[in-house]
Image (cartoon, rainbow over all chains, first blue to last red):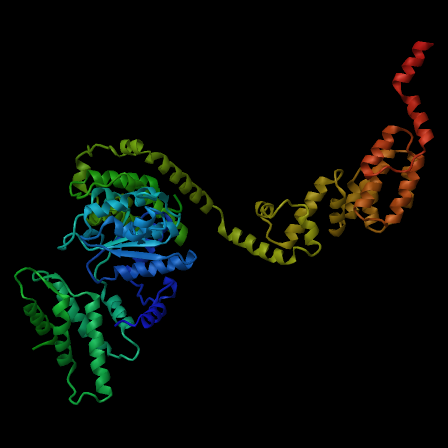
Amino acid sequence: MIDKEKFKQLFNQRLIRDITQEPIDIVLTGQYGKALELLRDAESTKLFPALVGPPGVGKTILCRYFASLRAKENKNKGFYWLTMDESIRPSHFLGSFDPAITLKKGFTLEAFNPGPLLNAMLEGGTFLANEINRATEYSQNTLLEPLEEASVSIPHLGRIKADNDFFFICAMNPEELSGTHRLSEALKDRIKVWIKLTYPDKSTELDIIRINLPEHFMIEESELELIYSIIKETRQNKIDVEIPASIRAGIAIAKLLARKRLLEKKKNIEEKESVYVYLSEIARHVLLGSLKPKPGVKVENIIENIIHKTLGG
Amino acid sequence: MGVFPENPCEFAVEFIRRMRNHSDIIQIPSSRQVLSIPNLIVSRYYRKGSITPNDFIEISAVTSFPDNQDLAKNIAFEILFPNYKKNLISSYFDDNGNDNVNDTLNENGIKSELEQLQDLIDEIETTKSIDTSIIQQLEKFIEELNEKRNEEPFKSALHFFNDDSELYKEEISSFNALIEEAKKRLTQKINSLNPTDLKAGASLDLNRLIQEKSKRTWEKITSKALENQNITRDLDKLMNVGNLEDLIRTITYLDKSNAVPKNLIKELKKKLRNQIKNLDQLFSAAKSFGDIPNFDLEELINNSLKSFSLNTTLIYQIH
């Protein structure tokens, strides 16, 4: 039996009412600083940008950070996002009529539940179409009118004009990755700024790992270097690996290693092991889900090779 | 070009032309990209305050489809640095590629938008040619002035300026320069000064100058009064001369500039009774003072009848 009262209370406690209040830990050096600068340029010229990069390079967090900056400057205008796949339909963007109310009152404004794109257009907020090239062309077409004319038609209700501050960003994986569709030519032509993000340089990536470690988790610089060498190795093996380890994998390895260190300090671990032993064990578990091998290649074999190469036998 | 390493609009058109004609192009750039490039360049200029060739290259790349970005960087570099690593083969063969960029721009109406952008870019270039250190100096002075705006003699000096933009125009960046310019402007206005000008002149210690240079009795007498000089003799002289127009204007100036006590103004107005001889003079005095002064009604009507030309004509005809 669900305790509705408790649910309501917890829900209200955890509800993010304002994106500006949400802390966002972000590193803005290297490519991320440049990308943010380009997003700012695009915003001021009303040219809609796309962030293109492999999974886990920080596209979404950059968008969230940018949206929170906009929200701070534009009187708390909201941030909406939708992650696409093949099942996404135009109604997911725009909203839909509640069947029960529609039966009772007809196609009225009251019966309509607005979707995230419509909300962002009305409010002048930021809308992120995440993984846009996973959506079908049918769904992609919903974006054509909002991007070109800054307006959209809602069946039975009418056509609305977007607020002047409405801003659209999309994020996508490179087209060569499986599971992606090609963007329609019409949509491509409406996206004017293409910001490519790749795996960051070493110092930026280490900064990202550091910033994501909780305060009580401490690891040494030499251990961080080892973690980076494992991650880097997955990215260099282009023969066997389709999707290499992302920044998230590095953070996960670092967190698990730091946890081991903490337990050691608290003397919860009886036998102290070397960092190589810890890392090879942790890396095996993390990389298993982080790597995507090319067809016909076993992921376990790739991991063993990487561990052997970076941490030794 | 001073601000931009290359004219952004011309760069964008040339960039798209070369991209389209390049054999390695994967996604043909659209005409809209021509607009995006200068737009982003101008936007970045406004944000950062400066633009480098690197910005041109970066913007050319990001406005191109990801598959074209490497090529875009090379082409942008070639346009910006034509003499670096010159491509001998392409210079040997004439570039016979069809230049259809301008036609497409015309068809899409993009050309007019591009022209608007060009105007903006020209404006930026012109603005940049102004010495910014002078502007900074002027802005600093205006800040200092704002604190003393209501203090004398600055308040009076500012009376001779319509607004602060004139301070920029005259490049006034110190209090001395402000006072000097105000003196210059007052000197130019002598003989057509109004009561407020005279008051401001007094605050700027220019009474002597006004008394020396002005040919108008009312300006001289008011200036003397503002300097607390005795003006009784001047007023008597004016009364005796019988120039009512000058007398009326002098009283008005003395009144409006608060140069003399109000009871003296009342006395002077009373004395006018003997000076107002006809309806024209009465009208003139009433118009200047805003009310009808004392006058001898009988004398005024008689004088008016005498000087009425129609009456004279009728008498002549009857005789």
